[in-house]
Amino acid sequence: MSDRLPARTRALAGELVELRVRAGLTTRGAARRLGISSASLNRTENAKREASAEELGGMLAVYRAGEADRKLVLDLAGARPAPGWLGLAPDPPPLARFEATALSIVDFAPHAVPGLLQTAAYTRAVHTHGGDLGVALDERVRAQARRQAVLSRLSAPHYAAFLDEAVLRRPVGGSAAMAEQIRWLVSRARQPGTTVRVVPFRHGGYRNPGRFSLMRFREAAPVVYVEHEGSSGFLDGAADVERFGAIAASIAAAALDGLDSVNLMNRIASDHERA
Image (tube, rainbow, N blue to C red; front, side, top):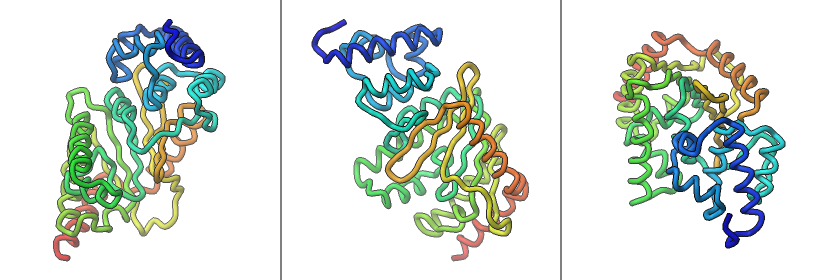
């Protein structure tokens, strides 16, 4: 290993190699799962480059690191979040990587349309409010389109989105843009393997933990992506996955079925068109 980087970096590299080997992954297989090149992963494992926070988050999940290993890796990396949690900026690259390899995705959206279902106009409106402008905003829209391509593949994951009715009522980007967005949701809901369901106002209160995505995989443990203002991260502990699975089931019980959801979305779209 290289002596150019601190001893802590070399120790971190050794721990990452051990976790990968223990997970039964080759360098090439791990790099493919992580969405990075084999050369980049080799350089990280040889302590010739430092892994980013996003890459570390992906490795901990892909390698199915236990609590003790997770703590050691995060300590060596100089980060000490709560057990089972890796805090990152919202929409980290690992999210798209996990979506691309998932067998199924359950998205819950209490405040905004999920990224995988947003139109370009809606994305622009959301991120303009978030402070993105000019080139940064254009790149955000392009990145969102690339991410959405996962739902159009022949091997697309089964995708279920649950939206609070408030998401549909608020005219993000204006009434015309919102009507277009809802009509797009309806068209996606009619595609095989995709479900869009709405929790209506008339249901009253229900368990609402905030934005989350529960992803399950063919050969890896499930992960939960949780997002709040200025922060996001992955939970992969068995207890966390079980808890969010139960929350998803309770939201599904509160939501309209697919046909009633489509009918409600069409009515709300017409309301926006008349506004």
